[in-house]
Length: 232
Image (cartoon, rainbow, N blue to C red; front, side, top):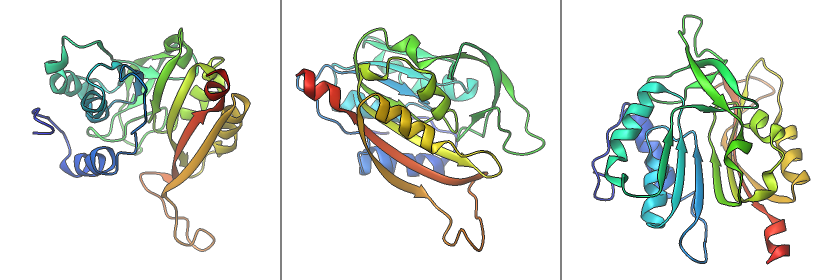
């Protein structure tokens, strides 16, 4: 049970660390003057972040996006109690453009587009949609936990200025070009002020490039759009 609701999970260790970040540290907490925010949960996984948002803002309007078909089924189960809420669940991936791409699941944890977790990994075809499909009107909070697709999603958007608060879990894969600078440039161009928190960093990268599930860097980016202050 989490906050009075039965919560199904696939990996207990992954659930513990997610719960600690989301409900313990409250990394997604943001203020809202009316308590009726619009939220996009990109990379919803099993629904823990959406559950947190519904506890924080019972009158929130939430769209939760999850490409992994198994995780999406569990997500539906975990949020079935909220069927009467303004809650939309979509089984697709956020990407730079519409289409279908290969998604590689990871036993309910960090599945990702295009990048196999092992040479023998078997992917599934998933529908992809750009972020701008969900930015037809201003939105209070967007979470992007996309296991490597976050930069293409940000740089392909033309409406980032419609977002007030933005959380990005940025991933850098060893052996692939780094693009953190492109993500930060997209934020700066849209008048965001951002703060960066390290999640994974090799202890001595000059001597040994340690990796975590193929990643050599993982950071959290907290961003607030300064345009909203200017317009208020």
